[in-house]
Image 1 (cartoon, rainbow, N blue to C red):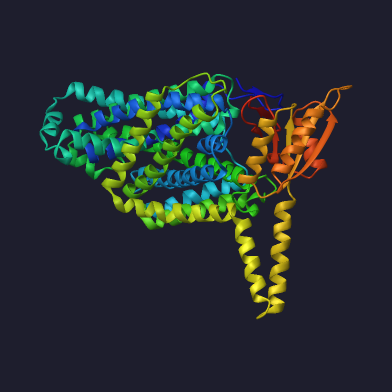
Image 2: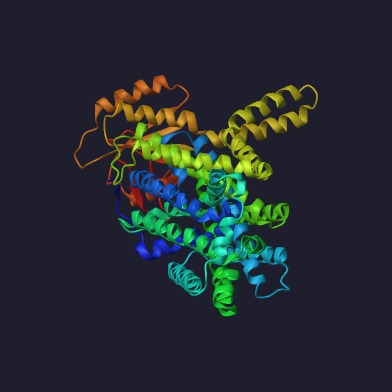
Amino acid sequence: MPNPMPTHHPEKLNELEATAICGNDISSSCLYVSALAISYAGQYAWLALLIVGIVLFLFRKIYGEVVGALPLNGGAYNVLLNTTSKRNAALAACLTILSYMATAVLSANEAMQYLHTLWHGLPIIGATMGLLGLFLLLTILGMSESAIVAVIIFITHLTSLTLLVGVAGWYLATHDLHTLVLNFQVPVKGGSILNALFFGFSAAMLGISGFESSANFVEEQARGVFQKTLRNMWVVVTVFNPLIAFLAVAVLPLAAVGQHTETLLSYLGTVTGGPWLGTLISVNAVAVLSGAVLTSFVGVSGLMKRMTLDRILPQFFLKENGRGSNYFILLAFFLLCISVLLITNGQLGPLAGVYTISFLSVMAFFALGNFLLKGKRPNLPRPVVAGIVTVTLALAGVLLALFGNVKIHPEYLIVFLEYFLPALAIVSIMLNRIAILRLLLLAAEWLVQHLPRVARLARLKIQRHLRELARQEFVFFTKGDNVANLNKVMTYVVENEFTNRLKIVTLLQPGEKYPEELLNDIKVLDRAYEQIEVDVVTMEGHFGPDLIEELSKRWNIPKNFMFIGSPGDRFPYQISELGGVRLII
């Protein structure tokens, strides 16, 4: 398995803590996905949700294999970064950011919808903006996910759902099945059961959003916990979502379900158990959905910081306040959330549509990343292996759901593209800014004859910026004479980075001699890659976090611009914020 280097990391999250953090995210969908499924599949919504559970079961192995082989934070971004190019990884990152944005807005809006059932004078749009602003303030002040709080919310949420299912089941047992019979006599939505299941399945895929969240903090989980979080999340949504949908169809007329789409569970509780149960469900919903908003702020902050360190986003995003929060990232995310809230006017349908399109795209990229991992990284040990048929069926299910969502509401695709395309444009500009700066330099040369003073000033600034980009050095630690790894390093730097300076470091044991074969290989590669300036360094020392810290300060090189040579077929590593190093071999 990938070997974690010695680290000063605090105690790892256990199964309950890790499940609670990601479980609050995915289980919050239980509060609205049943209503969505019923609106498209009618009386067969529970069956559509069961099919969703089958697809999620396939993704358990896909995530298990990928994250088991590459146990690093970052989700789909990390997978594609380690199997394809930085540009492809940036595409997945943009989709993930959009998914986080839709999560925050949808969860905040749903929380206020449930609160509105308790306080009818509450202005929902204004309250949603206020809740988003509250979590912006809290995260800027340094508040983050608390495992203890997450556990309390998660257990309370599961208890409330279990109570609702129990009360609704008892209500059904003590009353006749007249409503259930009538609902199954209603004409099937879409004209046929197959159409109802297709569209219901497409909409119900929203119910597994959050499944990817465990992969975003796998480094903080204890050994063996990640697989258990996948299992636990699958059990929660596969049991509760179909069961709640069936009970709603059995107890409530379909017309009544359509009138209470945003607050179906509290309405179901009020009908089956009385006002006390409806109030309990509403209070629980506000807490759980608010927790999902916090998860979105924390998650997007970590992802965008990683992208900024990889120089995919502007460097001013790295600015921190006294509490260590990247306030520019959080503020930008808050403004994006407010804008999508105002554009959609807080309507569940458009929000869920944007959310589902972005989330399903991320899931599809993860399945594609699994295929790439099998082909490009076959030597990486993995605790779980997903068969080709499993990955193919899972990818087909996600793509089918993606097509269904676009077919149901093509206008939602427009809202999605309104945010995705600008984000992709910004990332593309950042990744191609060397070429853009060179074009601007040519334009400045042309201006010399017309505006000589302006042209000279522009040329000086552009040249200075180009020098700053090229001045950054990359460090590669190699274990010995492995020309294949060295060639991959050269190729990676040429294809993905702006710098043309590479420092190759070999660590020697006391009394060990420098390998002459390595120097010969480096000379050959230096001639092959004329655009790269290679500096060879040998030193005595032991590789580990302390050495990385020392050299990054001595050479003024950010730690994420260093790579580790390994016996495997690639060389990535990641240093966590606490200095822990993971070496992929």
